[in-house]
Image 1 (cartoon, rainbow, N blue to C red):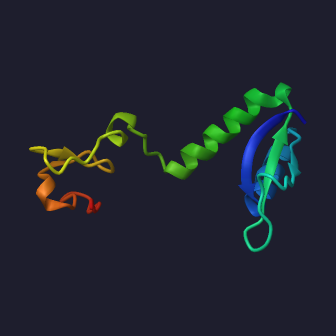
Image 2 (image 1 turned 135 degrees about the vertical axis):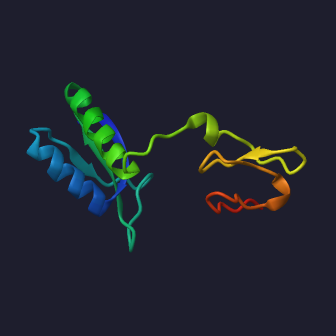
Length: 113
């Protein structure tokens, strides 16, 4: 194994391992004392082969899209800063423009401060 895919909770790692195995992709779970946890929230490193990198990336892209439920991430919106001194601010969650004195987005309810 030569490609570190990251650190996952044990149950998630086992699910990912099984789903990739169904696609003919072998990954291995490894416990590393330096990076992983034991006890109630066990985490493990997930390792794959460089040769499978493209298929693994596609798998995680599909996982990401599934988790987002079809929503698209707006990175510009996420980088907005809540400035209480500004005339208006943009909600990082929904993009609604509002007066910062409200401290809560009137559109989606995200609380600031």
